[in-house]
Image (cartoon, rainbow, N blue to C red; front, side, top):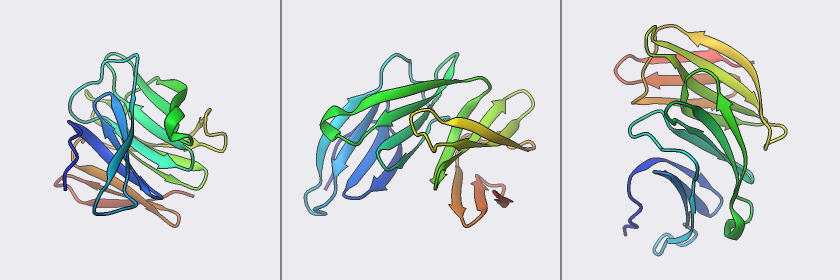
Amino acid sequence: LEIEIGQTYGLRLSGNYAYVLGRRKIVVINVASLTSPSIVRTYELSNFSWSSGGGNAFAVAGRYAYIFARDIPVNHLIIIDINDLQNIREVSRIQLKDGSGFACEISGNYLYELRNISSSDMATKLIVWNIRTPNSPVEEAKLGIDRWFVVNYTHMRLRDTYAYIVRGNNGLIAIMSG
């Protein structure tokens, strides 16, 4: 069974729903019935010109979706309230001062983001956001990861107090997160 969505950047599951990040949109799919999933809502993300390619990441926790949007020349963390699927709405947009997020995960009250800081010096940082107040997250810590400028084929997963990061063809690292 296929549902046509167009270009996609990521998939997150929460409860009976799949949240698909598409080009300038979030598509919410009811997956309670595996034999007949259905699109519940498409929410158009506004006020930016979505770039093609990597540099886009998102995570879902509770009633919020956190989207790292690479927009030229400014990048943002966009927080969307997804609690009421008929009334999905943007609640906050934070301009990122340096670089673009390309992978993220949530654990408890923290959002972990991998961000390309500069293409000239190939710098990547692990950014930790405090999301105790979900619609106004605070950047709490930055950890430099030398020469890791790898937008595509990079994944991060959290377990216990570690962030596990895999990049393309260059292996795995584990970083203690707290």
